[in-house]
Every structure is written in C-alpha cells, then in structure tokens.
Length: 286
Ligand code: NAD
Image 1: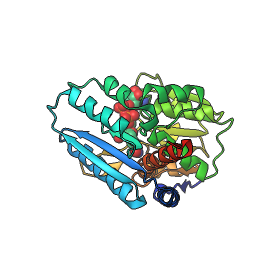
Image 2: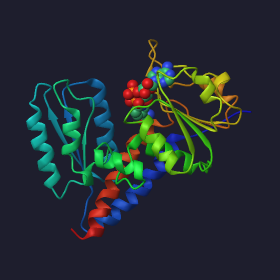
Image 3: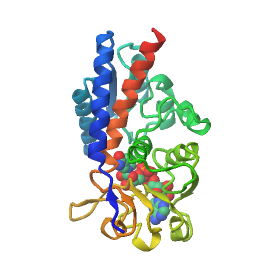
Image 4: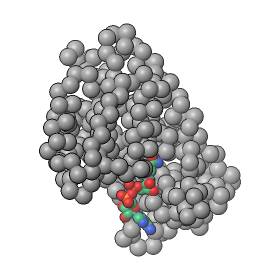
C-alpha cells in the first residue's frame, strides 16, 4: 500500500479563502475581526511564529495588533494589557505567544484572557468545554488535525485512535476532540511501556511527541491514517516530523508530510477562531 499524502497547504488555503469571504461579509456589516498578539522577550522562534500569524491576518483581512515587551517586564504590566484588550471592542481574539519567560505564572496569564477572546483555546473555561463537548474555541493544532481528517472524508466515529503525546496544547485536547467524535481513544506518552503495542492497534494514529523517527513501519497497522504533528530540526538543518515518512508511507492509507501537513493548519485555525469570535459578537448584537 502507498499512502495518500494529505496536503495541509491546500487545505489551509481553502479554509483561509473561506475566512476571507466571511471577513468581507463582516466588514460589510461594520465589523472587522481583530487579533491582538502579545510577545514577551526575544526568542527568535517565537518572533517567527508571531510574524507568520500577522501575515496570515493580513492575507484574510483580519486587523492585527502587536504588543512587544522585553523579557524582564513585570507580569502585572502584561496582565494590565490583557485586561485592556479584553475591554477593547475592536479586538476579537487575544493570544499570548508561548513560551513566556520563567518569572511568569502561565496559568494566571491564561486565566486573565477573556474566554470569549481566547482564540488559542488555552483558558480553563475552553479546556473544560473540550471535556463536555461545547468549547468556545478549540485549540488550533488539534482543531487543524480534525479539519484535515474531515476534509479528506476520513471516518472518525467508531475508529481506534491512538494519540502519542499528552501535552496540554496538542495531545490532551486532540484526544478529547476525537473522543467527542465517537472514536475510541488511547493516549500514550513518554512513560508508556512498549509504545508499539498501542500504536499497532490504531486506525488513526496522531503523533505529537517531538521525537524524530519515533514511529517506524513496524509500529503501524496496514491501512492506518497517520497524522504527524511533530516538528523537529535535525543537526543537518532538515525539518522532520516524528514519523519515518518514507517507511510508514508504504503501510499507511493516508499520511501527513512535515513540513506541509499539520503546520500550515495551526495558524489557519487561529484565524478561523478569530473570525468565528467576531461573528459571535455580530450575532449577539453587541
Ligand atoms: P511537549 O514536549 O509539551 O509534549 C510532548 C509529549 O510527548 C509529552 O506528553 C511526552 O510525554 C510525549 N513523549 C515524548 N517522548 C515520547 C516518547 N518517546 N514516546 C511517547 N511519548 C513521548 O510537546 P508539544 O508542545 O505537545 O509538541 C509536540 C510536537 O509537536 C513538537 O515536535 C512540536 O514542535 C510539535 N508541534 C507542532 C505544531 C504544529 O503546528 N504542527 C504545533 C504544536 C506543536
């Protein structure tokens, strides 16, 4: 079997076009969706992520605001800015680029963002919503994976899903979202004994561990759908996922490449959530 390669770039492009049309409609009604991005410190990777997010806003017509703070800024100053943005009617989404410097209390920062503007989906209210199935904003990376599965008409209901990785931003919300779609879900992590005994059972295998070559063909069931969320930079400079792409491609029915798979979907779902937030405000007549 040779897997079909899921084209994340094409799927992201289609969703951005849809977002653009929805933005145009909102603008005609007097609302331009707005996203505020807070960046603390000078981590080069974070600066690139923020740049990509701003570029994606520009592409679909979402108004973006950037707030940059030095790494030694007091937490209170950032909290004050978030509170200000919570009250600003032109801002429909607020995101604080992670990671934050060590002296920050991350949970306090996330709890201060209004759940109605928490387009990253990290506020406890939104996390709780994932458990009961009506979250306001699904977190962007697992939301992007779900959209990729749906846009390729991959059946989720009743399927055995194994999620490798149990982080708060990818693995855990991914598992909850797929459970909500009536899949049978198993989560594995760094302390899992004999990972292969679980992965081999997966009809859909989602891997988000940050370990190059963690998943090799012997660990994959013939015909499985394999979604590689991992992004790893090798010493050679090459960007790879967590899955042995060439080997697993010969066994899987579908596979996502790295780059060009899940990556482009993450920023796109951030824009999607921001547009949805503005639509909600418009529908509520505020
Ligand atoms: P994390 O470090 O917070 O969590 C990694 C998880 O993987 C943990 O639960 C850990 O227990 C598990 N893990 C580590 N080694 C393992 C092993 N050998 N076997 C089984 N489980 C193992 O990372 P994260 O933030 O969840 O990100 C995971 C990967 O996804 C990273 O490569 C990251 O760069 C990538 N990522 C990609 C996107 C995207 O847009 N494509 C978004 C977020 C994260």
